[in-house]
Image 1 (spheres, helix red, strand yellow):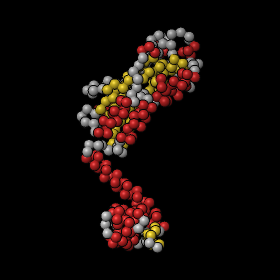
Image 2 (cartoon, one colour):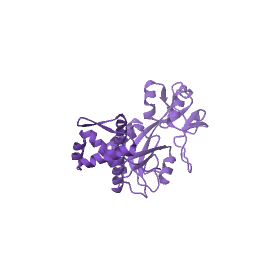
Image 3 (spheres, rainbow, N blue to C red):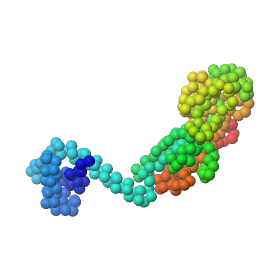
Image 4 (cartoon, rainbow, N blue to C red):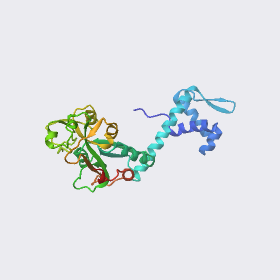
Length: 302
């Protein structure tokens, strides 16, 4: 790649001439001689083989080409300043990126709240968000591909931070045959009907959580897809209350009257990489996640 002919300092000189209204004013603002300003502007025009400024009376005015290049130069010098600031932040232990993996059942609203709180404190630190199901979150953490994880699992060898619980409810469409039985449902009742389950994204030890023993089941990749299947009357499923609350309120879906409880509280835990201390940005993100954490379950609602 050919080296640039114009330096960042020269672009800053051009900006100063325009921003301060002339060569003398730019020299004063940059603490240099007016001859130095004149020389650098002349040198830039020579190297680019085009005029950037013209003098009208005592004022330096941009040419049409100069206006275009000046706009681009402002972004160039701003990017350079941000790059230097990033290097300084990394030197101070402030990482450029935090990798966060979250179980898909964790309410996205809580993640949004945490990231909204984190953004003004982040100093430009990027967040790489990854969503997994069940043991997929554990595997990403074990493999060192995440700095922070939010999981439903008790992960051996890691110190968990409790984030509260969400409520899962066994539901089906209000016209589903299970509701027509008008009785508490046993395992035998359920086994004759289709259950929709979400596939564990882990590869090593995938798990079935919330499976009610139905002989027939369809496996999907996301809770959103599972909910769409249930809304269409294609089976029954355990689904998070925050996903189906509106459907329950409207009567489209109804809670299954199971002999065992049709409500299950699922705790969530926050973990960090055990072999790599968290950087400054990651610690702030952890605090933001904890501040937006879920409420603890109220047993009276079971």
